Amino acid sequence: METPESVVASSTHSAEDVQHSEKETNKRKIPRDVEMDIEYLYEVVPQLSRVFRITDKIGEGTFSSVYLGEAQTSNGTREKFALKHLIPTSHPVRIAAELQCLTVAGGKENVMGVTYCFRKDHHVVIVMPYVEHQAFVDIVETLSFEEARQYMYHLLKALKHIHEFGIIHRDIKPTNFLYNRREKKYALVDFGLAQGTPDTRIELLKVVKSQKAQKDSHGKQALVPLPPNTRSCTPHSSTKAAVKRPSPQSRTKHSKELMGLCKTPRSVFGERNLNSITLQTDKTQGHVIKPTKTDDIITRKLVSTRRRPLLARAPTPTSQKTKPVAFNPSLTCNCYMTDRVCNICLSRKQQVAPRAGTPGFRAPEVLTKCPDQGTAIDMWSAGVILLSLLSGRYPFFKANDDLIALTQIMTIRGSRETIQAAKKF
Image (cartoon, rainbow, N blue to C red; front, side, top):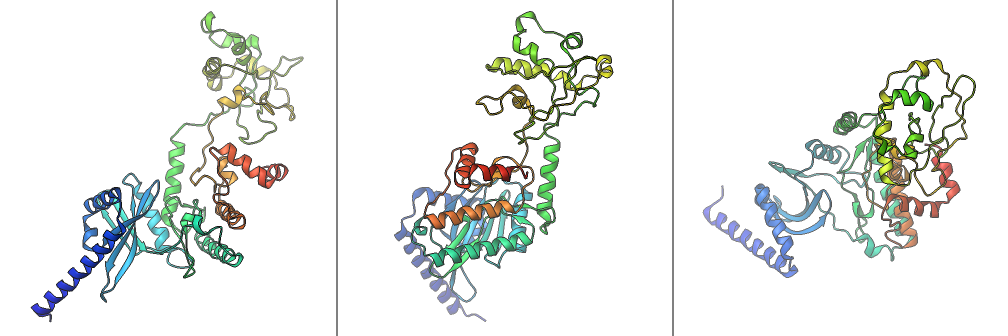
């Protein structure tokens, strides 16, 4: 049983520790904006003040901020922790999925684990062990070959571990793979963008994937193709009878020629055979109706609005009697190998695919919106890190948009090799 004297002595000792820690904090001269952020964190999650003394802000991203905190353990020593404060707008399922990734797959094989979790209303703080590390940009030029080899070995070891659980990290980069050069410690962090493979062992990643699929299905609906006997485009004579013409002022040359066009499902990224249109002619002879190029935006909008009714129109007697002409596989749209985009390409539905990741580390299938993305995108990002280690250049790729990023990849990889790889998707 503790005596009053021991309680006073313990309180005095704790007060001295706090004063000593405050002196150390004052020596570091924390910026005023960081102090305000720390005060705000104490305010929104007040239970933190009873356990931790937050000393600094050590990281900030799009979806979270990371703070350095100290807590007194049962044996009287003070231990450092990393406190990750998630933005309040984060979806609860996404937060729970990140926590499950840390608890199930974390804590081993160079993957960060989780120690505590605090929540107050819509504010969530994940507490993890603190790994003192060096910034990659400060050491990339001085790493030896053996250090680079060990770095990649431990990174691939961590990726192999999470991929066995069916976790796609999606944001592999040096700032998410902590490296302590002196103690040779490594830690893969930040599963905020993680997704699951079809056979993932993380149950909440299955929920995230199913919710995303439901969101896509309730979004913009895909255009339903017409039956085979009505998919072909009717001649201008039958079109004039079926379509209600607008005012004479809006009749343009381009719109008249495009009234006979209709679109069918086709490959999004195929360079050849971009527009699989079956063209209709009369009973004796047919000719291909090629899409015309529209140079002004007004005409593009006019054409797109006037073409929409054709997709849902019931079959006409004329279209039922005629037979479609076989499509020439070598036919391409007018914008192929040019610096323009034709109306068919402009009017196609936007491709829906995961786009999360950091510019410069995203794989080609992410840049081209490939719907099937797996653990290979993490391996691509690891390869980009290897390029930085071997060249001493960081970041290795730096592009303002996806097209420039693809161009830079083709410059390194080669055009022919890139085309051959693209044919596999």
